[in-house]
Image (cartoon, rainbow, N blue to C red; front, side):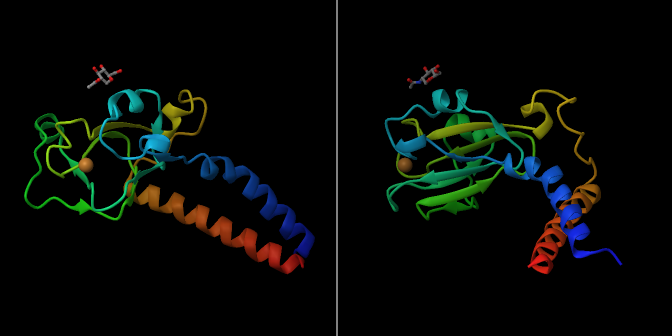
Length: 168
Ligand SMILES: *[C@@H]1O[C@H](CO)[C@@H](O)[C@H](O)[C@H]1NC(C)=O
Ligand SMILES: [Cu+2]
């Protein structure tokens, strides 16, 4: 049977191997310290940022002054909101960017969208954001493979914790 020390070393090595990918996720406060508000140019803001798969957006505002609604590109242009849209209203709304592609968010209060409370987010695949295909192994392509990869990471994390507990 492997000694506790060996287990700890293996767990530490695995944790080191996987931590960079986990730690690289960024939480973006939309509008930075200004938050989600009127009188702010969110197009200009988004241009200065890089969004990648796994990152999170946080819309901060004093509710109920504003809302966050995800819309289509067409609805973004015209500032319209389909009837059945999900409206976020907590004042600290979090949105996980779980896949690459373009997403659009608006405020549905009054004419706030027309007045600039709208933001387009271009989400890059993690390896694009890291500077090219060579920077990281390509992500698993099928949904099943993605779930397997997530599971593998979870198992590693649990293993590391168990090993750490055994060590003390
Ligand atoms: C916001 O910034 C973008 C990009 O910098 C610019 O093209 C646009 O005209 C600005 N919009 C307003 C309303 O100032
Ligand atoms: Cu608003």
